[in-house]
Image (cartoon, rainbow, N blue to C red; front, side, top):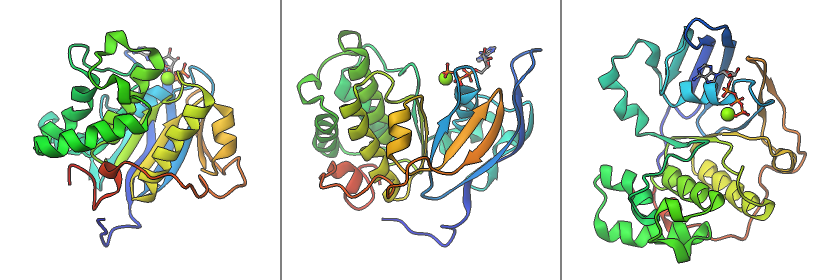
Length: 256
Ligand SMILES: Nc1ncnc2c1ncn2[C@@H]1O[C@H](COP(=O)(O)OP(=O)(O)OP(=O)(O)O)[C@@H](O)[C@H]1O
Ligand SMILES: [Mg+2]
């Protein structure tokens, strides 16, 4: 596992960030927070409060209308477009609408970030099926997204986001299409990734999850953010007897 002297430093910092679409009103106002290495936050708030908008700034799909965003110590609001891809590769993203490639199998969708990182085919064939099996898709490795259910697609998207053990994982409503049993299993996967050093932000409407896992909340109401303490009192995620996929646990991930 990697350790570095900047462990305590913020990996993400927002300072007085505002966002408007076109000439519309600000949908995010004066948003300030920071994420340290290995932090875990839920992102909560009613529909339309600005969760996806905030996450889209975090995964560099948009630039803010005002304020400062720094990621891994670098001001991303001032960066040229061609400087962003190396930063993006350190971010794992689960999109609210999945964004899988329909012409590729589940296995090939999840393998994509590993192939981009130059991981060997032997490692891909070892790690990807294991992770897909862990999320309950052992029987769907070769299925293409249009033939999968919403919850199955969502799990492929999650596997793709975590397979190369990103430094920051951003997930937009990642359990919106699965039942509670699978939702808890997926949360344990995120918690394990987090335990290994990834900073995690999970946007969710699932109150049962927020009550079960003792993680603090970034809470949005009408574009304004408050950082709130955990709702759950239990130890975060709690101990688990689960054996996690090797891609996540062996010496720094499949892509490292
Ligand atoms: N592409 C866009 N163009 C214009 N307005 C947008 C766009 N995307 C979002 N908005 C507006 O920004 C506000 C915040 O939307 P956002 O999608 O961030 O909310 P959310 O908290 O993710 O909601 P949900 O829980 O329903 O996913 C809403 O008022 C929405 O109408
Ligand atoms: Mg949203």
